Every structure is written in C-alpha cells, then in structure tokens.
Image (cartoon, rainbow over all chains, first blue to last red):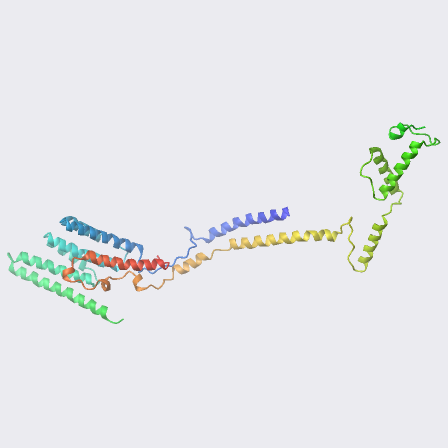
Length: 190
Length: 198
C-alpha cells in the first residue's frame, strides 16, 4: 500500500510540473487572461469619452462662475481649456463640444472688444467638414461679430460698415441653411 | 544410587548405574515426565514447566519425530483427507486453520490492488484535466475580433438629434447643452457597462 501511495504521489508531482510548463507555453506572451472580454466596435461610448465630456462640463461651469463674478478674462481662459481637452479620436461629440465652446469663447471675446480674435476662433471651428447645429451656431456668432464690426465702422467708414452688415446677413443665412438642412434630415423617415 | 538431589539436577548430577534399583522418587518423577510427554503429543502442552523438564521434553519430541512414528491427530488427519477428496472431485477445499492456500493469500491482496488501481486512474484523470491546454485563450481571441452589434444609444455619435437647432437667444448656453449631452451619453455608457461591455 505504501508503494502505491508513493507511486501516485510521484506521478502527481511529475505531472504538476508538466502542467505548469504546458500552461506557460499556452499563454500568449505578456500574460493571457482567461476572462472573456466582449470587444465593442470603435464607435462605442467608452470611458475616455465620458471623462473628456465630464472635464468639459466642469470647465463650462467654472466659466459660468467667473462670468457671474464679472471676471471675463478668467472665464475666457476656462473656456479655452475645453479646446485643449483630449477626446477619443473620431468621436463626433468632440467636434460638437469644441464648436459650442468656440461659439461661447467668441462671444466672450466680442464682449471684450477682441473682434479679430473672436473671428479667428469662429473660423477655426468652421474649418471642420461636418455640418451640424453647432457649426450653424458658429455662423450665427460670426454674423454677430460682423454686426459688431459694422457698428464700429459706422462712424469712420460707412462703406466698410455696409460690407460687414452684408457679411453678417450671409452668415445668418448660412446658419439658417444648415439648420434647415439638418432638420429636414432628422425629419426624414428612416 | 542416585539421591533426590541428584534426580532434581539431571544435567549436572551423577549418573546412576543401569543395575541400580529405581528409587520411589525417581519412579514418581518418571511417571510425571511420562504424563508430560503424553500431554504434549496430544497437543495439550502445559503452559508452565521447569527448564529441565522443557529440555527433556524437547529431546523426547526430537527422538519421537526421528523415529518416524509421528502422526497427526485423528480429527486433523480426517479433515485433510476430506479436503483432498473434495478438491479431487472439483469442490472447494475445506478450510484448515493451520494452512493458508496460496490462492487464498493472493485473494486477500485483490482489494488492495483494486483500490490502488482506482487511485492511479483517479490521479491520472485529475492530471489530464489540469494538464489539458487552455483553449479559453483561443476563444478570447475569436471573440475579441468579432465586433458586437451596438444599439444607437451606446455609440459615440453627433449630438445634433439630441440638441436640435440652436436659437440666437440661446447661442451662449453651451454649458446647458453640454449637460444634456453628458447625461445622454452617460445613460448609454451605463447600459453598455451593465451588459458586460467596456
């Protein structure tokens, strides 16, 4: 009986070492996991997107607090932070959130009399290829900037002021055109 | 003539002459020893006896065996004959208390052999189960490369349907719009997490 017990024990020890080797050779390099992960397509909402949206939200609330205190410069700085947030690549929300932040930033800059800087911010956003309600909003803000410029030119250069007002009308028209197009698309039966 | 003392010390005492008349003590001693020998041959050896008697008894037993007259007890002899006859006609041998057949001795090992073999088989099964390659890893990779279908609200997507047209009066309400977008995406993200996704 002792002989049988010893034989079984020896076999267990020998095969346990074989098992270890087999496991190591089976696992992919870098360590494998036996947990099954369901991989989602690249367009799934993920943690990176939620973190970026949350950060943008906080910067917006921060800017609101600064604006309520009359600290426009700090509000502008807070909104600019949104433009430098890192979103997942190709996330459509990233473009929408940034364009909305650009519209707010441009309005704040207009309030500070920084019309050229405001126009640069708007044009940067309009450079994106996709039409959205947010780009339409940017066109609206662009029109407001042209209006502000026209008011400044009324006293010095009437002709340029008229040009700015025409540009403003064109911007508002562009905004309306995009809005209508998108609304029609949304109303189309799928 | 041997004295009583001599008779009690038979190994070192003086040897009486063959013509000497036996003393009553010698006769009594001889009778006692004769009874002892008879009882021993009958299988009823007393549990205790003197060292001298034991030595004499052993000598007597050897002499009797050497003379070839040793016989089994009647009962034992009958049992052996009966057993031999039964085996000759194909029956089982009668059990004998003194002799253990070889086949019976082997038969006693059978349970241990079966138990040992069962242990070996069980150990081998356990080892094979542990040593089997982990196919789970292969399955992992297959699933990893299979994109799962997603509901629309689980996808990263444009916020236009959620926000709608932005009126000029609300052009600066970016914070409120972002709150709406965040809440919507959080709902989708939670659903995705609860079903075992990211």
